[in-house]
Image 1: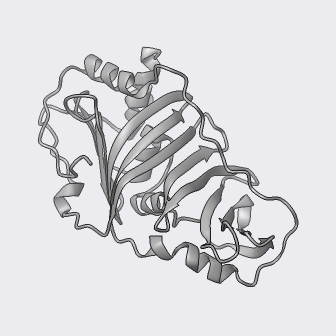
Image 2: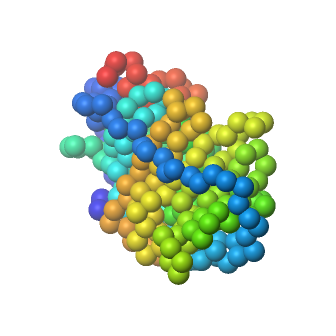
Length: 287
């Protein structure tokens, strides 16, 4: 996978060309297939006295992860715009690094965060947001508002709303638990004796309206390799993440979560990024 090291300073190649390059790399030439969500069971169910044990089994692999690196193929849509990208990701909560590879030359973007401090560098565009809130910056470029630790838990399949109660069994292969605002988690196993997995998590929004949903599939060694993130309003985000070359509990030195900023980079705010950032450039180009 792409080496996760702090990138050297990169000179601007012109804002117009940088924005166009980002748009060209993210916009699909052919229509993108929207991620297909899992069909979830319905029915009243019965009280599940074994839910706690099932959840412990489902989270055993992800709970043991202290750090993670992976290549992440991203496809779907953000803000109504089709996207496809390949990221190199490094996660060591509460720190994260995401680097979007370009077909050639400098990365499309580099996102680094530690705790509540984040930087987003657009090397080809000569722009940078410094000291932003991680969740706000991630929402601006991907629609998904998650901090570093929550993002790591989401990628590993260990995230879920808290607290959850009312555990139910639906047959031998499904377990559910519910929270406020429509929050819900589904555990599934292929059959009696097979391991339990977290396969779907529904996150609450305002009032009874769900905010978004995460589905997990293609498990290897207890960890998902396919993750689907879909907002209740699918115009916000509708994404599929395909993980490969995954390595866990590797040493990620502090410099991985830093980025060298060219001295002539234009400083912009998170609000400016929302209006005219990489996804804004995609829209303005009409691609």
